[in-house]
Image 1 (tube, rainbow, N blue to C red):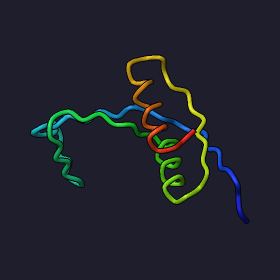
Image 2 (tube, rainbow, N blue to C red; image 1 turned 180 degrees about the vertical axis):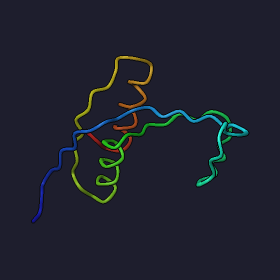
Image 3 (cartoon, rainbow, N blue to C red; image 1 turned 90 degrees about the vertical axis):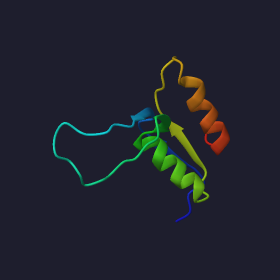
Image 4 (cartoon, rainbow, N blue to C red; image 1 turned 180 degrees about the horizontal axis):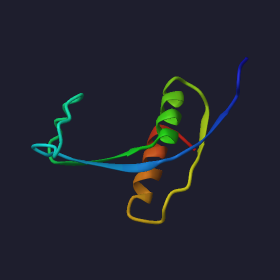
Length: 84
């Protein structure tokens, strides 16, 4: 079955990671080595929308975003990816 358009409703958020030298408890399944502080757009709604868009589907996303300093970053990323 072919769908002309897919609508994703889900979370879009800002993720910030910070490099640390150690964790206060023993934890080692994954070794994250970030360089400084990095901020990126994430969230299940965004990730699924971006994946389907990359695969060639026509996708719209419905999500609440704040009226804060990250709003324009999120909207600009959607424009860059061709996501409504």
